[in-house]
Amino acid sequence: MLFNSLHFLIFFPIVWIGFQNAGKAKSILILLASFYFYMAWNYYFIALLTFSILVDYFAAISISQLEKDDPKRKLYLLLSLVVNLGFLGYFKYTNFVLGIWNDIGFTDFRFPVYSIILPVGISFYTFQSMSYTIDVYRGNLPARKSLLELSLYVSFFPQLVAGPIVRATTFFRDMENPLAVDGAVLRSSFALILLGFTKKVVFADNLAICVDAAYRNPQGLGTVDTWIAVLAFMWQIYFDFSGYTDIAIGVARLFGYQFDRNFFFPFNVTSISEHWSRWHISFTTWIRDYIFIPLGGSRGSEWLISRNIFITFLFGGIWHGAGLHYIVWGIWHSIMLITERQYAKTAVRTFLNEKIGFPYLVVCRFFTIFCIAVGLPFFRSDTLTSAWIQLQRMFQADKIFLEPIEFAGYAKLILLLFITAQIFESYSLKKMLSQKFSFSIFLLVNFVLLVCFAVREAKNFIYFAF
Image 1: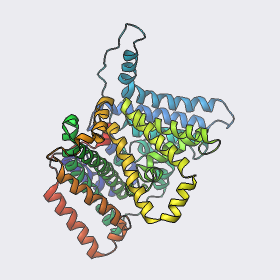
Image 2: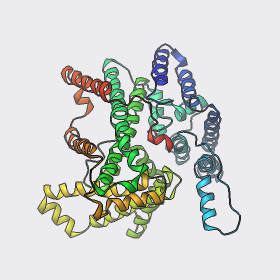
Image 3: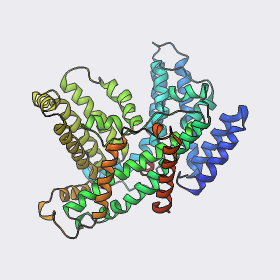
Image 4: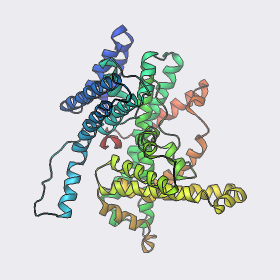
């Protein structure tokens, strides 16, 4: 079920009103609603979700009943990891791995391409469920004795199919002590949901027109048009994904759950590390806590730290999709982070930062956007070949002044977005809602944008594919 669909606009008010009157059956109601939400896409895969929940419930309970030094605890943890990663691997990576085998050609035998439907949200709910089992194993939280409570944690519909990836400690904290929903919360949640819809159907879906046209024919674009399309995709995926999480966070708050912010102006930054501290925060903190730190984190020699960064972002690339282009994208970001880490220790960086000041920071902002943009063709393209074609177009000097510039109108919008991001970073939504006048302006602007510029056809959110 899409947030930006009539189905959801009918489903959500009914569930919320029922929740207000459900008494002690609130958790049951939300669980049934969450299952319905997921089954609206493909009801067969509810069995997969349910099985994953049952395995993790059994594994966590078994781990909690054993002494910390009992080797069986690792076996139960391994059960959880194998089942979750096994499902993820089969549905997401089977054809990719078999395709690599076919390309290498160790033997004359060739695997066929199997028709495997990727269950929507599997990358998100498997990671969320695994983190619960891992935290129980580490002793960070007790195992839940209630299967209902664990089921609700894994399948809670606002963040089920595209995040944010919610930690069990956060979810169970609010389950045990539900947050009040008063007039101020209703207003702020509604504003966040409205903002999410505006991001998605006004900005992301309109930018998609430019992006989709560019990727249908990358060979036919000049350098300027290619750069416009790449920057348009940069903003499209931000508005698409942050719009989804805004809606998810706003809806969850209306049921008494407070999820952490998942985006914070990720392009208004002066370094790649700062970008990743502001982009898809629930995912970056997940790979930090469950991959980077267990590998050794920032401890040890520079070589080991660089290795840990490389492995972590290689994993991040693979998590996003089954394709060599995603792997290259992950490696590109790992190289940038490793290079940035080494540069930060140099006397040149210290001198420029202290003596040049603001102009140096401006250059850093442009250079960071440049580095992010160079990696985007590998993220957006369907194949490594098409990504390489677009990357060549970005730096093809003889195509710079190809006329006419097809996407000139989008260039103006992109420039406006960068400028407004600089302005609005200092203004939180809470500040905008603090006064009736600013709140009225906020509502008016969003409604005008939705009425005048919204793309009417409901389009999938980009991260549904992951």
